[in-house]
Length: 330
Ligand code: CP
Ligand code: NVA
Image (cartoon, rainbow, N blue to C red; front, side):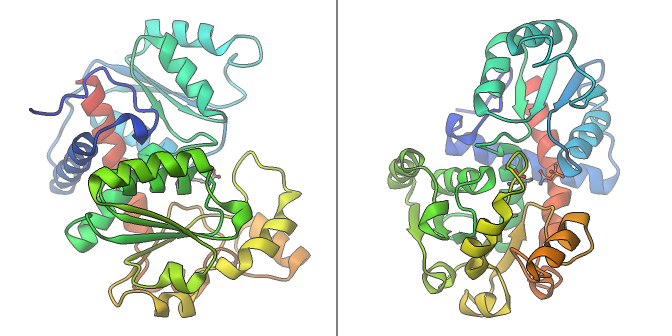
């Protein structure tokens, strides 16, 4: 039976079957071709969407805006200071108001429960643009990127190094399990994903032929890995006081040339971005001054190397967000 996601929310990949995820990856590749060939695709002309951001963004915001315009839609952006949500109006009331005006709602912010509550009350599709727990639109872009490089997903080993309990690591574990990939979380025991989510993903992997492994050994994580993935050590919404502890715990899990050397010969490096690979940012410079380290989760050498596909990955955010919006609004 064909896949039909019309009217669905896009809140976390646990809600989608492997066939539905594959459909979204295929659709992303199709939209990428259309964009590259300059073929107009204003399939959602006349619709309007609203983007609610309670945390900052470059890629996700711009992807939703450009994808929305390319599809012919009107787009409203609301930053944390410009809406009543949370301060003067409940999530439930906000959802009921926006659902009367818009055809789809994107939310980036804090608890997964907030985006779930928006979706329960909006009456139109709601898309998760990142919560504390999950970052599902990133996953469609990441899987498209991996597939572009290897031609397939099944059986590939993807290792996430570092803060393996953050939104990106959680989401990678889910998507790898769904797609029959071998996921490895490589970090200290303090930063491992929640046991309940690990068990859920292991049960999925048992059905798909995938695997979920947790290890504190860099050798084990890197061995045979096709994809080496990392993310910043302190995520948005976490207190700056955490830096000292995270640097101590996660420095051994930095992705550097020695780690890449231990991986499969054709291994690629991925990162959702933004990344602290040098001191050309306010935070990077501040950390360098306070802690004496100029690179964090990945070295500049690996980030800038030919193994690094981070900018293909960033471009793919736009194509895949377009696919998610089209599939759920058409
Ligand atoms: N990867 C990602 O979500 O980037 P932004 O925070 O810039 O949206
Ligand atoms: N884990 C990061 C991802 C940013 C795209 C954060 O939540 O800040």
